Image (cartoon, rainbow, N blue to C red):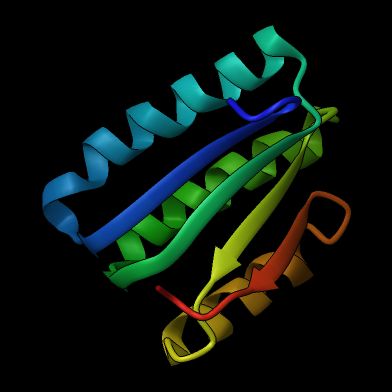
Length: 109
């Protein structure tokens, strides 16, 4: 927690081995954000080197839920502009849920 923001950091590889855990985590994160009535959930993926399509789908599901159920919090992805896959993937998420998602590019370090 940082004021009215929950900060989450992901690093390494999000592949098929962690899909179930990621799904459970995002469900719990959504519930906690609602319980605490936060304004923002910040997801720092600057040091995430890879994300499988299965893991990416869980983020899409989270955003779809937030969008459809009118969540009061916003989701900010902090990305590394040197990671080309992040730019492409996060662009798709911002197009999917522009009222919920924004991206902040920051050099990893």
